[in-house]
Length: 248
Image (cartoon, rainbow, N blue to C red; front, side, top):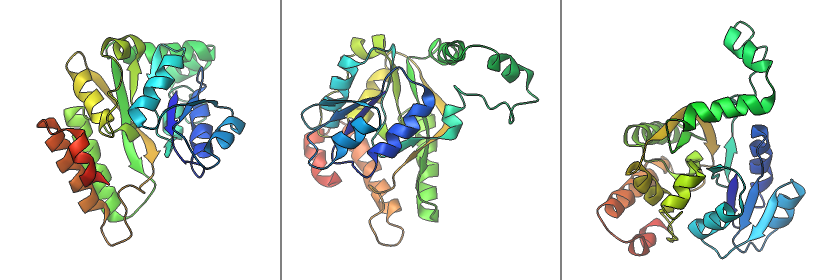
């Protein structure tokens, strides 16, 4: 797992602790020059911490170059892996006590369970992403969440906070992320769609609402509409270097 971070001391520990539920080969935090305690907290939480120039695309490419796994999972520092996602790798014997298939999986070593999950998904797909959930229960946020999931599922066009995962061979084939000031996630999804299929997994990861909730009533809705407009302009060929001024 690769986590790009910049001044995320409030979120990085919870992010890493949630990632540990997946029993991953490694958790790499790529710090883009934090001036707070992000690096220290990440190391104390058990992550491998490396330095990089600032920029999410730059940072994720750096992490991918150091990762040892055949599947690259990219997680934003303010996003959490849910219990539902971790259950892919850790079936619950009480919840699934009546399911003979789950009972059979529980008898296998954990590496075999993980391998089966990976083969079931990545045998057919070059990568994928998870259902989006925000850490806010307001009606406006839930509406944004609903339409974001409909959009990403129908068009296979997720945002980066949906925990995208990519096969290493595919990632290297397309040259990794483009080092844009933003929209590197949309650009990656567009390029991936041209060479293979992405898998939408209807299990949630929980993202912070901070980027779309601005402190006034219903603020997530206009913030989300702005983001959709930016994506459409990007798809139509407008440079992210020009579009960034509308995002800030």
